[in-house]
Image (cartoon, rainbow, N blue to C red; front, side, top):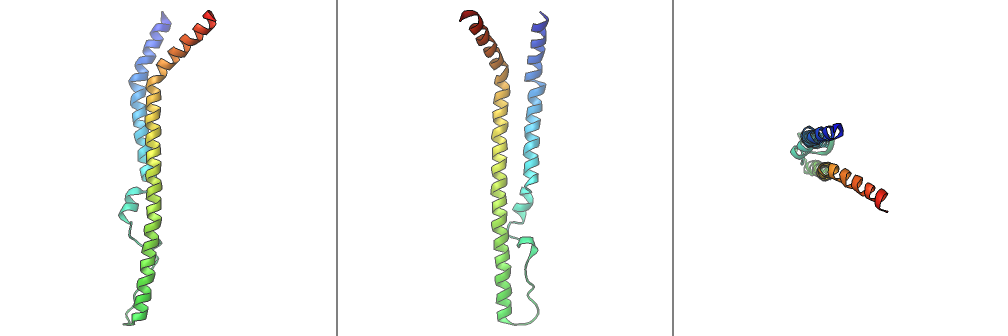
Length: 130
């Protein structure tokens, strides 16, 4: 009789408090990896030069120097864009992976008590009827 009461309390805990904790844990993981990869900052500075590398244009009216500086600054922005895109794609890939694992763990958590009962029943069946 006491085992039935303990199992009932376990089921109540399993489907209320623990389920809410799994939702919070998944949300916290997603928040952590979103900020770990600095997705808002990277998206805001997508076209900024890489590591703020660049040349200053100077005050002379030299077309060759101006064109050289323009090319270097454009290349640094292009390098920054490519590297930030790679980080964004990787960060979103990790977020999708974490979200998928969260959903999988949630489904497993919901099915686990029934799986335990089914395995217990199957083991008793094998012990007594084979």
